[in-house]
Image (cartoon, rainbow, N blue to C red; front, side, top):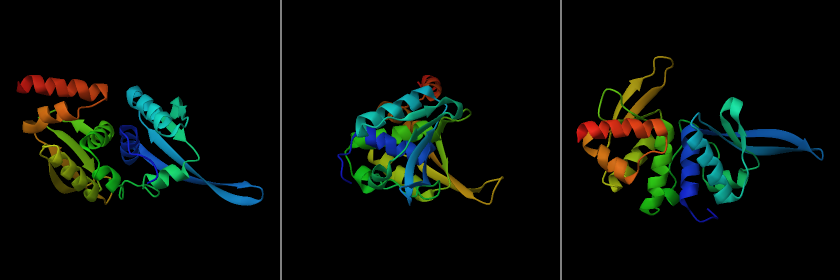
Length: 205
């Protein structure tokens, strides 16, 4: 990686692992076929969209294109960035947390988890727990290890069968005993998840 890891870069990486994707298109220029590497981020939450756009500007001095109709942020010409973030062939099955984030200081880890959980986690309606579902058991195990480093206990349940496909999935769970610690150390930016967490913590008090 040829750039210094920052909270902005950690959040960008996490959002791509969460609600993001990598798209490679081909085009012709000067009679040669070239590839255009594009980062896409989809989210209906204005706060998360704004953060992603701001983070890209701060981290890489790159402008993003926001297409409101598709609730999508698009950044083209990003091959060098994608390769340095170690996500050239990202999919729901194979995303992972690279060493430059996994071995970084706690503030970087906190920003990665917070951004990923803003995309993928839910504060359970009927239980006192935070849940993250994924078909990527390796990635979930990495998150468990990072949470443990922050003294937040979690466990993985599953595998479960998806009713609409043959894929198995797992669920990472943070139990109620660690909700307050999670809220104090990591928290959310997503307004609805903030409200749901506050409601749970009030009932637990």
